[in-house]
Length: 253
Image (tube, rainbow, N blue to C red):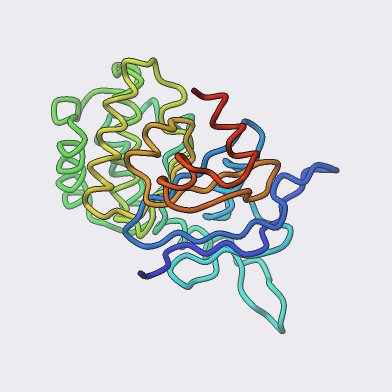
């Protein structure tokens, strides 16, 4: 299958702390890759490195074969201009843990903002597309509402629709259910399941091991900034080969 994301030799440090330590992994097109691991293992940093929100100290990321955030110049990696990086990000959807919806904009205005500003989509076309996406995530009746008028689960679904509005080649999810009340988790996971069934390429940082078992095609277990184990859910989550993976999963039972 076609490789959507390649991470090679990814290193990221904050002072003396090495958050990512020579991380390698690939995510295939049309599949869901779940990244799991304990708090502080580097999961969110790795996700943010994929669209260059966290520039790497060394190593590189490619999305569908294109280097992200850097270019090769005289045999070395050099930072791209901010404009070029923004262009690349416009093809990579990102659903943040903190949602980042604009509180002063309505639901539909939140969804159309990026396509109009970054891709030059005509407003009428952007609105029509936004309404289709909001229907897809079950929010047809909330088009004119404001974020403060929505539940946490509804806000998260708006954030997903906003990411989809850019028609991205890849969607990144950073703990999409961590800030939600338990009864709201299911509605967000249902949307992600539907996207997975439609063949959307996704990399999902999650603590929902049941969701990873059900939806993921590939699981990456990260600990202390290193990939400890990876493979299909049937192996990593049911019959892990590494003691550290078994220890982590055992604490979740």
